[in-house]
Length: 437
Image (cartoon, rainbow, N blue to C red; front, side, top):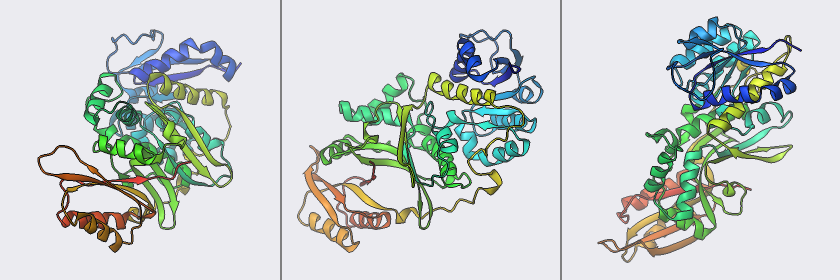
């Protein structure tokens, strides 16, 4: 049997403790599968005295994760600290420069420094594995990096944040407000005390930027993603979507267009009969469209200690199965130095159907003015519905428009015109309708 694979874990929070526990509890099975023992020999965290529910007494303690990465007697450095800079960046860089394999669950780090880290890993001939950084326990990175040889990806999209999916699912199922759902998500541990990173789409954007690089061979460009969160979604939107045969999901979408690569994160209406519309609660799902395979949908637990730990341990096991001298594949599917500069597509040229909700004064001429603005911008309407907006002090109506395929620019110009006409009593709502099988 080959020598034991020595693991150093930096970060012993929920995920780090779960990884240590799985490596201990599944030791015999992992040895059988990998042909060698996997042993945690060094750890680092902020509080050495905290009870983490797993015995780490035989592992050497390091206060500084960089020292663990550089000096510890380890083969694999597992980074579970979090953050896009600071000790996470310093320790991962140090481990790679020292010629050690790295496993990380840190999407923020990869979104910011992934290409630079990939260049070091490939120069040093070591692995940088990051399955847990995108969609938790779903093996989407392995699928895209290893199992789709010869396929050209045309589009990748999905539900990449469990917090947002939980909130939207409950809003639809129980008819309660966004704020009430968010408070419950925080109470249950699905959302942070400051939920901005999740609900405004930043978490999804980081994950999408990594998938974009894998799909299209471009440098990671998280800052170039069109971004909208879900905090402005109301029960009026949820109900209108259901009546029209749609369900609202926060999607991350990346696709190749004539003008470049389009990356966008925003609330989206998907047909209720589509597979992705059936993904509820904290579950994640990723759809990959290719020229050979067609569409592949991967779905499963997207977050939590066990789901993330499963992906981390899977990455460690892959390293355990490799042997000295084996030529590792590139970190992002293409050699890091050959990744193309990201060419951003014009978001406002995006074409598709749109849902538009307008709260307007209940007076003569409003409908005609809305129709004229749509016609002036060559927007064809699939349906238009008027309904009472509620018992406000001023008489008003809610107008729901669903367009045929048009452009983002045309919709925004039409809505801006309606706003300037003075017909609206509240901010307009525009939600894209996504093609989803």
